[in-house]
Length: 254
Image (cartoon, rainbow, N blue to C red):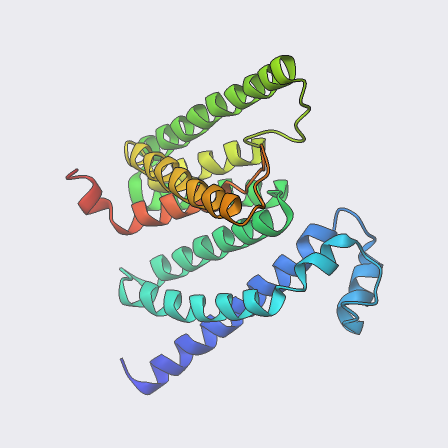
């Protein structure tokens, strides 16, 4: 790898990281404010004085850390994708896929929402990626399986919410698993295909269980434990998908 190639990859990583950070800042706001107001807001950069919503005050306290994490993450990711590429086309589609996953995950963590237009875009990109790497039948069956499993979990969550309300007279806000997670599971199924989607969802469940247990433990130790506290589930789904994509040969032997 020569100096020009290294410089080009660093430039790509910085540009993509900047795009991810900007989109994560502004996409959650487009459903609540006029486009003219948002354009004015972007130009003026009055992050703390412009009265958009509570989201800004909460998120921008941690924005510097997020910006730096994304910047370094994409430097590592771009070099990794370039080093493992089969062709320029596979490098670009992988970069687009990782970028979409990053935006979905960050917005879900910061806002507890998966934006529907991003999910639709994910389905389109996931279908193209799956067809290109796995073929039509494997891709479609993987997508149907991922959506079917998480649709079942979605309805189980609704049932659990009803049972909690019935037996404990507690009204829970939102759903344990949102429908956005169901669509995201379908996207991941399209990307990894059948039967790898089973490994991906298994990894997702294991990781979510471990991290949730750690969160609950530390919350309890710090006297900040809250019953029925909801967490973003897309990071676990995406982590499971990325692990599966990069270690398919190992997982297939397990």
